Image 1: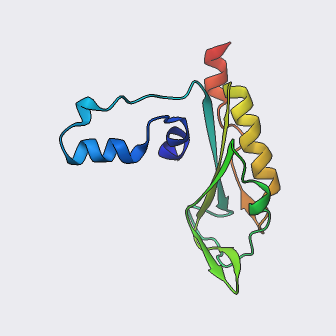
Image 2: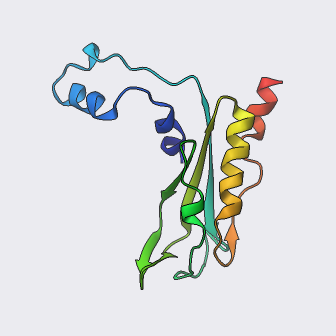
Amino acid sequence: PETQVILPLLYTDLLEIFHGICHYTLCNVSIRWKDSAAACVVLASDGYPGEYKTGRKIKGLKDVQSDNQYVVHSSTKMRFGRPRTNGGRVLSVVGVESTLDGAIQTAYNGVDKIQFDNKYFRTDIGKKGLLHLA
């Protein structure tokens, strides 16, 4: 989840950075960041990290994709042409906005659109960050 929330803020092409690393020319790459904020909410199967069931139908994924909202799959699989849960940490929803508060709201808006039986997620994501901004 830490990388999932950072990469959408990277303005520089990640391939250019990898190329610089591989060819020892990273010092020539101008690494730039977007002037935005991002928040990531992990959707897990109830019971994680202990016992949990897999194979549950996931609905609403197509409703989340936009320029400022992303779904990152962690433990999903396709079965009979439909996405299903396949582990404890199922997927993450990332929201990107101009402010941290906006990014948090966008991420949770995406979380509300995705459904699967016994979906669990934390409701305090970003709260500590907002306290530091006050």
